[in-house]
Image (tube, rainbow over all chains, first blue to last red; front, side):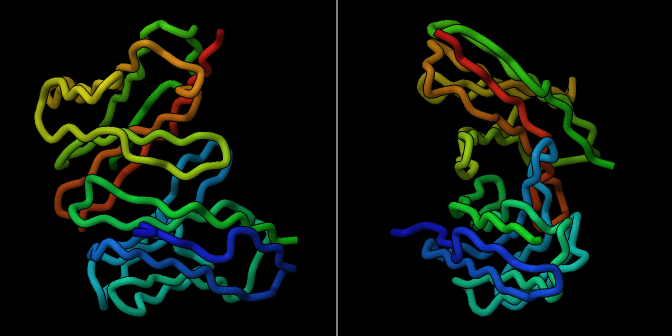
Length: 111
Length: 111
């Protein structure tokens, strides 16, 4: 089992460029989440998907869109990147909510 | 609203015992979780308290008191590898099992 995988691991973008962060899990979990983590800010929820076919906004959704492609995959898209979106992005999945399994993260720098 | 408070930094020496507290304000939740995150790594699940009382997993124990809106993580026989950030989180009732996160406690274990 690979658990939760994320691609890419690192990315540098210019302001205004777009990109999609990919996330996949092989644990047959229903729920998937996208977080961003900034120094001193802890983990902030961007979007989540409680089950296949549903997505909901989290704490900081502005500037992002998501797609729950199937039960395994949950992607995060930045349509027009801004320097404020420089962060580390984590994808996570869970079956019962209390235990979330995280991917290795994507380190994004927007210039 | 819902919020969790934990100390920003804790320092201890190898072999010692350290307690990281987490106080919360939330109207209702399923349980309290603890996660560990090493520098540059992803958060990993440590423990979960659905009921009041102490849960023990090896050198780590976690405690919850709903009446006091309080929980803690106890780390015994500290090792250098325990130097990391520790996050408490609650999964709120009726919100699709999203986690509400504390800002994390940075633990430094010194020789």
